[in-house]
Structures are given as structure tokens and as C-alpha cells.
Amino acid sequence: MDVAYYDDSDTLSASTRQQQLFDALPSFLAQAVSECPGLAQHLGSSGFDDVRSPENLATLPVLRKSALMEAQQQNPPFGGFVRAASLPGTRVFMSPGPVWEPQITGADPWQSARALHAAGIRAGDRVHNAFSYHTTPGGFILDEGARALGCTVFPAGVGNTESQVAAMRHFSPDAFIGTPDYLKILLEAAASDGPPITSLKRAMVSGGALFPALREYYEALSITTRQCYATADLGVVAYETEADGQCVPGMVVNEGLIVEIVRPGTGEPVPAGDVGELVITRLSADYPLVRFATGDLSRFLDEPSPCGRTAPRIAGWMGRADQRTKVKGMFVDPAQLDALYKLSPSIRRLRLTVTRQNDTDHATLSVQLTEHHALSSDDTEALLSKVASEFRAVAGLSVASELAAEALPNDGVLIDDARDYEA
Image (tube, rainbow, N blue to C red; front, side, top):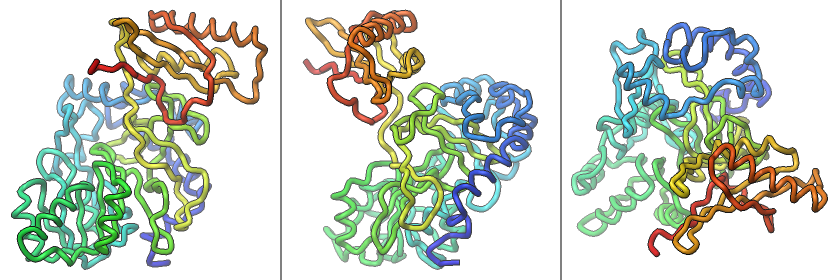
């Protein structure tokens, strides 16, 4: 096996990987609902023998964080979504919300070792981990993976910059783990009052945007910087890779995860290449998350990765999917717009734009038609009227509907709140 890869799974054929995941899914679901009563109530306990394809999986309900939080409040601490036998001898965490998460069993429980390996971090490296170890699993997610790789980890946590700089000078870490901007704060603090930090060669960052200028800043200091997309619930979902020493655009999806991209606020998969909400199924017996809605936007990248890894690729984090907006005192949810797509195959994209006119909320529903379903002008007007009427029925709100003058952006936005709250 090439040392560039973590294990043979990195280069498993895409069709074999998908078949293995979906072959395992029916028995996994049956076992999960038998041991997790909250999940059983959410999914229903009927048989799952037919859930053997992405299309079948899409028939199951999406689990949203709000529903999980409600279940946890009614049945602390985990709402019946965690296998009780897995809890003794491990950690539990509380993230903002609050949302409670368990540390599942085994080495590298959040699957971060593969991402760290792709970033060039190896056994024997010294790692400075500046993610929080307090109440949330943030620091532990990367800590466990680094130690599984054979690294020595200093659990720096967050804040106390002066002490962290002193620790880095003494420990001479090879790699940094933390948020994208905090490493720059540490490097500049060190340079301002003593010897600069020169031991760092690699960095894995997450929890914020790694802007191109910031990546270039680190690269100029010979610190190769990669990022991963991770959540407290799921661990590392996707991560950057490299080919010929250069960072490959997008992120490779981690092993053992089934990723769907749906219209925000719904469970309906978007057309290939469209931006939508990431929905993840993780086949973990301890904490089985099935069609878990992350609230984050992304899209699939179709072309194979030049790094040679064969897992699906996403464009990375592209914003938040939660677009629920109050208009004229009424909440409008993206799920209400999803019903409109079913009115006609001619509808390609929809967008509700909310503005203020004469101190009054004004909503306009723009409709983009597909290239393959041409309509006459009369049919177009009839469809626009039907769309406005159906929206009024589902949302209780009257809107103006219009044909989009140009293609609507492929950014996952269904509700664009363009009101100027400063005016």
C-alpha cells in the first residue's frame, strides 16, 4: 500500500464502497432500533430489508437537531438515541443548544486519523492541539485521531496565548491542530516578544473558514495547512487531500458515512451538482445517526480526485441551511417551498426574496424553468399563478411570482432575506 494512503479503503472502488455500505444498512438499522428506543420511535420499527439504495434511504425521515434536542430534554441525557451498553467507561459531552453527545467506543471514535494522515501528519509527530477540551468534544475529536496515528499530543485547549507560545517553544511541535485563525495569533505573538516558532511543518484546521490569504500566509512560513469539516455529533465528515504537493479542491468524504445533499429543510435529494443541505448516515452501533441533518450547505463534486482517493467528494462547507424567516409576522420555512417543486417538472429552481418597500415586507417568488421543459407564454403565466396560489396555501402568505430573469445561483438559498435592518 502506498504510504500516501491511510489504508486500502482510500482506494476501494466507488461502486464496491457503496455496495458494502448499503448491504450492511438493513441489518444495521434493525439492530439500531432494537437498542435505541428514541431512534425506533423516530424511524418506526418496521422492517428495513428494502433500504438497500440511496433512493430507498431517502424514504426514511430526516433527523433534525431540534428534534434530537427535544428528545434529549424529554429523556435525558440522549433521548434514547444512544446504545446504553456503550456508555460505561467513556465520556459524555454537552455542546451549545444544548446537545448531548457520547464518545463512542474504540480507538479514533470520531474518525479523524484518516484526515490527519491525509494532511501529512505521521506517527512520531508532536502535535499542539488548540481545540477546546471543555464540555464539548472538539479537542478530543482530533486528539483521539492523532494518538491513534502514534503522535504525541499536547492538549493546549483554547485561550491563554502567552502560555501556549511558551509551551510551543519548549515542546517544539511538528503539527498544529485548531481553528484557522488562532495559529496566526500564536505565531505573531511569539514573533513579537521572543524567538519565533519554527518547528511547525503541518497544520490541520477546522471550525471556521480557511481563507486563501490565510493559507498563503502559513505556506509562506513552510507550514502546509489543510482543513477538515467536522461536527460534534458525527466527527470528521470530510477532509482536504493533496496531489503532487498541492491541495486538491474540495473535500473527500470520510469512510463509513453515507452522505446525501437535500433541499434545505426537507429530505428531498437535490439534482446532481446542486447546493443543498448535508444529511449524513453514520453506521455506528454505539450512536447510530440516520439521515442526520447537519444544517450545513455543500454540493457533490463529480470528477474523480487527483489524489487517487475514491470516496465521494464535496465542495466543503458552503454556509448554513437554516433560512427560516419571518415575513409579515409569519414564519416561512424552506420546507414550504419544497412543496412547490412538485407542481411541475418544468421548475428547476425557486427563490423567495424578502425586501422592505414603504416600511412593509414584500416577498417575491422567482421561478427558474428547466431547459428540457419549454412552456408557452400562456402556460408559463399559468404555472406562475399556480405557484403563488400553492405557496399562499402552504405558508399563509401572499407573494408576487415571476419568471427569473436569469439563472438563479446554485448556492442552496431558497429564502433570501434582503431586508436592510440598518435602514
